[in-house]
Length: 306
Ligand code: RIB
Image (cartoon, rainbow, N blue to C red; front, side, top):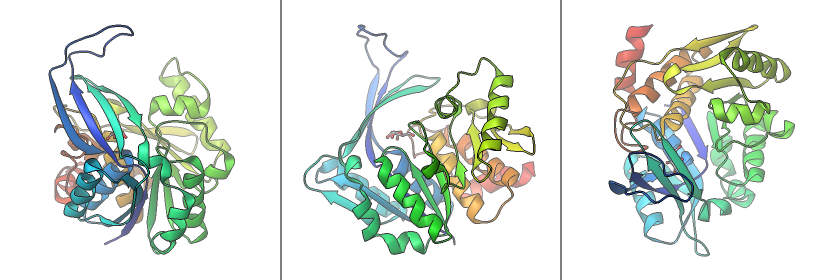
């Protein structure tokens, strides 16, 4: 059992099902609304936990009903919640998700996630030091991300930075990230370029990887799979075919599962294939976390593909 520590966000997702995303200035009628537990941090923690890892989460919720529900849920999933602070002065993070059949758009109100500060990292430093791998995303303050990566790296803990939502990444951040896992849109922001086609994406990946040889770049590409650079070529691992119901949390499943693969010393090709299989399975159910697979479910398909 590997020790995974996730430093990141916890949100209540307000999922609004619509036929299409409204245009600016337009009012449309929605179909259904559901309250589901999410937040990139909490989703990644649950994903790694369902795969049988020993997962601890460090983050912040508000002292309200949503916070209580999230803590109860994570505990039931088996995630260690000792590192989650309940801040009296604020409210639990909320994500409003407009979900169509094909995709989704999300607006996040961080609330307590903005209080996930470096003091909280210091209070939980032993959890980070003793982990096999740390995962962090960008829905919490940047200085916390930077600090958590630094502590992990100094203590020989492997690190994955999921740069979502995307921002420019400093050299300081990158030097402590063993992996970064943007999707294509996020990679455009990181690389400071708009890709007209597949060729431009691949050229930018190769150039970025050459400039940052110590950080492994893995770009997630939805139904087109996931790509990484090997030598001076881009390798793409295709996804399995599934009936897509909800893509929310697919990237988070990928990251939680990549952490599983990397901490179990899989080769990059194996870890990416494993994570891609888990992410594909996750989109067959409604909600960010509902479809996150257990280890046996991923292995059934992943072992067959090998
Ligand atoms: O990655 C999906 C997640 O992004 C949602 O659960 C939502 O909370 C936002 O943080």
